Length: 90
Image (tube, rainbow, N blue to C red; front, side):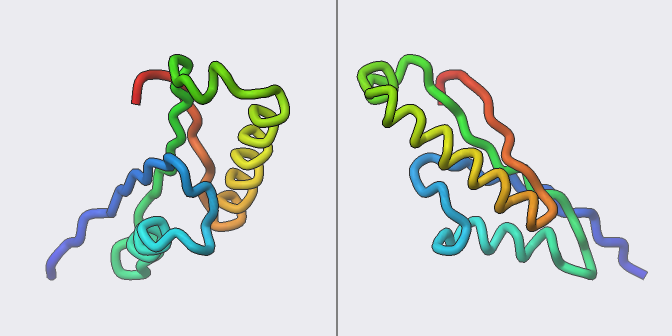
């Protein structure tokens, strides 16, 4: 009897903050939702505090990014996961 190790997948979000048209994420979800070898997915978004676009953007643009991240987290929670957000130099 061959033992199959659980799958652990990290998906790094950079620009595409949606589930429905993200083939790499959908593939990762299919790997961890496999009944024969279930696993965990760790969706990650890194906020680069030195990013020129973030430093120079308006309050409305920054709020839009925050709302997109919150919506993405809700969608991932509906799939049994969550979004991990951190700061740093990606």
